[in-house]
Image (cartoon, rainbow, N blue to C red; front, side, top):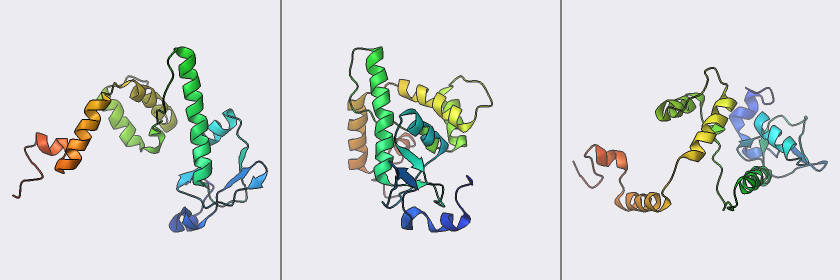
Amino acid sequence: MNGFSTGEEDSRGPTDQICCLIDNGERCIKAAGNASYSKRIQKTVTQRRLNLLLDNTARHIYICDFHKMIIQCARTKRRRKDSEDDSNETDTDIPEVDLFNLQVNTLRRYKRHYKVPMRPGLNKAQLSDNLMKHFKTIPVKEKDVVTFFIYTVKTNGNKLDQKNGINSTDTT
């Protein structure tokens, strides 16, 4: 798979393993979650100068939820600081959606659906980064989205069912 884990760990899953990171010289002893310490995350840790290293003796690359949050916060802080430099507005807690977790076929469908222009032959990381830039530009009317979401939950329906003339209240 990625050179770090074996089929044995894959079948067990990360639930009975500890975090694979060394934090300030000490091995973390927290339970590993389902987040993995990928090359992309390693790059973020290096760029943000976080004192985290992958323990080479670990037989997996799963990290605990604590370190996952530290890394996510480091990524978010950088984005907020850059956006404040670009404009005088302050960014409120905007969650970052990581498109890298999606499959390549899904990323390609997104690209095709929104007709996002980019050169062919990009790898998954480049494709997800380019699509992330596009994703951030999509305008969202929060009031409309939240209102529609609440309506959908209360009526147990969804927009696709309504378009097709099917309603969850129909008993046919």
